[in-house]
Structure formats: structure tokens, C-alpha cells
Length: 195
Image (cartoon, rainbow, N blue to C red; front, side):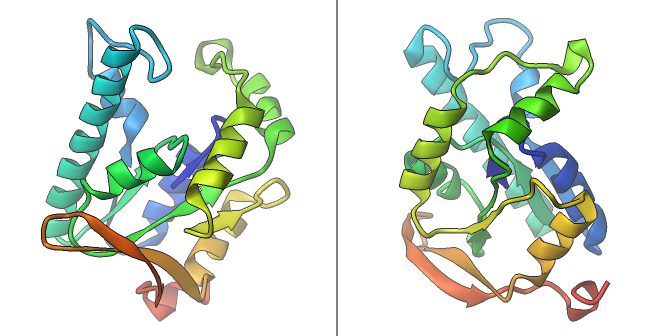
């Protein structure tokens, strides 16, 4: 699950994981916070180090997803993916099963308002909403389920994700390389669609 900062990813991924019988939430921000010294913000400087740490986060996310999936848990990933290149790089790290993309897109005003409503220690400094929205839309194309959640409760957003009749999945070859998106039926148990 991705979206702009303040789109509700953390809240929705927690609720989505809780709605499934066996699921684990993997938050990229939590993985990045494990770097105690020498951390560079993904858009920070030096740019080479920022890119190296983003790639490290993708590898760590993929490793955790592999471990959880191998133990029978559905990995739910919470990450900001700014463009199609970052999406593709993360997908290459994920388990060989199909990956599903959900984009929370409540709009810039809602994201800013949510950030302003946070406690001072939880607010973040970000002013690139317009550019990020444009690069995500251009880079993801028709891949994934886009949800305008501005007027939806968390519960309604989770229901929209679970009830989606089709999803765009990424097929990968044995080397983990994406071979292209395809539409497939989602594999959420029917009992979760009626609640």
C-alpha cells in the first residue's frame, strides 16, 4: 500500500492486517528508523547515499515479506513509492507470489490536514504533494487499485480493498523480475467480503 504522506497508509494497513486471518504489517518508515546513525532521508543529500538506503529498505522489506509469507502470513506493506521505478524495484524484492498494489489517494488537501492534525512530534515536513501525486500517477499507470479515501472511514477503506473484484498483479519470472502486470481475481476469503 502506498500513497502520499498523510494519506492514511499506516492506519489503513494496520486495520487491513487485523481484518485478515493471518497477516503482518511491514512499515518502511519503521525499517528506516532502525538506522541509528548515518541515516539519510529518501530525498536527502548526498543523493547517492539516499538512493542506497532506499534500496536497502526495499531489500529489507522484501526479506521480511518472504519470511512472513513462508510462515503463512499475508505481508501488508506500508511504503511511499514516488514513481514506477521505485514500485518496480520493490516488486522485484517481494516473494514469487503475485503482489497487489493499493494506492490511497485522498488528495493533497486531506493529506495536509491530516498532517496538521497530528501531535507536534508526529508531524513531518513535506511540501511536494503536487509533484509526488503526478509522478505516482504517471509512473504507476493503470497498475493497482486507487482509492479516493477522503470521505471514507478506515473501515470503509478496508472494505473497499477487500471487496475489489479484480486487482492488478505483477507476474515475476524465477529470477524475480517483473514480466508485466495482469488482471487476476483476488484471493481474499469470501467470509471477509461480507463483513
